[in-house]
Image 1 (cartoon, rainbow, N blue to C red):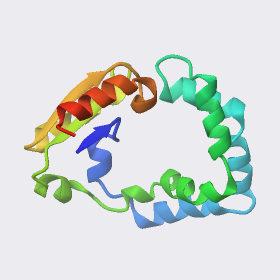
Image 2 (image 1 turned 180 degrees about the vertical axis):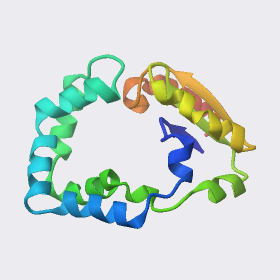
Image 3 (image 1 turned 30 degrees about the horizontal axis):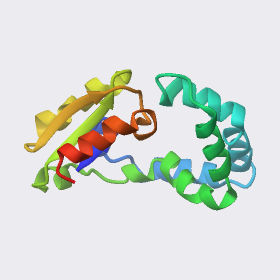
Image 4 (image 1 turned 90 degrees about the vertical axis):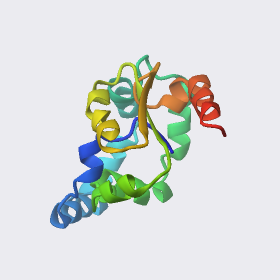
Length: 156
């Protein structure tokens, strides 16, 4: 199992209270506030700002922005709302991670300050290793060759 730029270990092993998740999801699904939020979030200028601030080590390219333009459609909002509301953190995945015998490779970008927060994956999981490749957060886009090389090293 290879995870590129996963959340910090504590984020996948600590459940978020249901009331908080519900509040977040209802806000994002709100016909007024949610609609306003998504109209802003889906603007090319804000996507570029967010991508350059949090996703890419170097400035994002026009291909990335063109792809986000194509994918910023109303039909894609529900999964984005669920993700941004934190619904993936509805429970702890610690037991699943610890019980799985499958080797795990945690990949961080060399510019990602959160890499240190991924150290507990290796400390807590018997079959886990960490590595770093060029990039920040969207590693398959930033460093596709390095990601493919890691997949090949895993034997796929």
